[in-house]
Image (tube, rainbow, N blue to C red; front, side, top):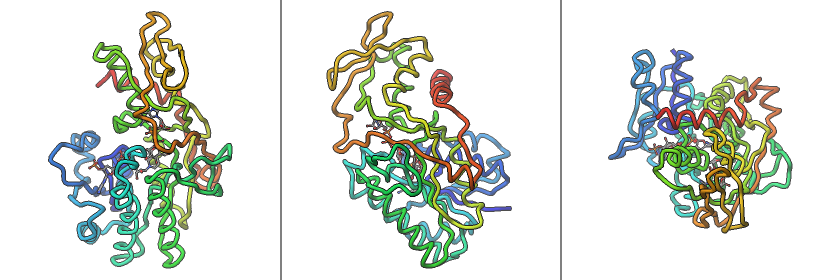
Length: 339
Ligand code: NAP
Ligand code: GDD
């Protein structure tokens, strides 16, 4: 039986990936941080499923703690490691830049070094990101587009990207960087914009809140569906040689578009009025204000536009996105109301 280890298993991607690998017949081990609160709700689908749960194991460890990582990798003996653990919030990285560097940069090296010492044949997937491109002037970004990070988060991830490449080239290790563009799902953390919007739509419809407050409405992202993006991680590790791959949809939408589409799913048509921080969105029928702009959510450095060219992945990995933007918003809204 193939054995995989996932760091960040309780996160959005980690939980979908664990389900995917278990269904493929893997024995899956996950690294979980110590916490006095319950942080594993994304894993309920596994732990409540006898068939999946019998091959699923959680270990307490922290990617900032070399000894704990060493111990887990030594005992688990994985053939593949999916290194997903991160402080993954870009805005938060401006508030805790040093911590973000520890978790998102040095920890990527930590895992690689432990693997080099224990068994350099273990294949590693590193979670790189489209944030690396920063405010690129290219219409589409691909594996050849220069990086220009604009946040402590992406600067830390830049280190992770290059240290992976260095170990790949210097020691012949199998380390692949997945440059994934934004991907969302009902399991997205509540402070990321898509989940915040869908959760707020539900609360507004249920009368729990009157409106939602957002930051930059004009920011554009290439949003895909997390559940299908994690499959590409596995495909990357099944290739003959390690490489870097962009995973994206090639389509771009603004935060404003996401808001409109989310409300459309509950039969509310949003109209916009005003500009800048005085802009607001209101229900065309009732005239009630449902969206306001709050500068608190602006970032010290904004990344305005990301759109991926995934042609290399399509050609080599035979991977392509299937879920459209509209379907993604619908999946997220339906999950809110089901909850
Ligand atoms: P996420 O939901 O924020 O999950 C992050 C995971 O990392 C959580 O399980 C978290 O555990 C864990 N973690 C954080 N610090 C840790 C530490 N010190 N030791 C061990 N585990 C730790 O992120 P995601 O959206 O699934 O993303 C997965 C990875 O892909 C991240 O590296 C992210 O930066 C990268 N990425 C994401 C996207 C995207 O659009 N989602 C795009 C490109 C790249 P707790 O539950 O204990 O907090
Ligand atoms: N979070 C948040 N909250 N973002 C807002 C808000 C708000 O209230 N209002 C507007 N935005 C804008 C942000 O300024 C940003 O331009 C865009 O919405 C998306 O923000 P997030 O959902 O927080 O995601 P992100 O693009 O910054 O980062 C995500 O994607 C990266 C890949 O490109 C994270 O998952 C990163 O970990 C990942 O690497």
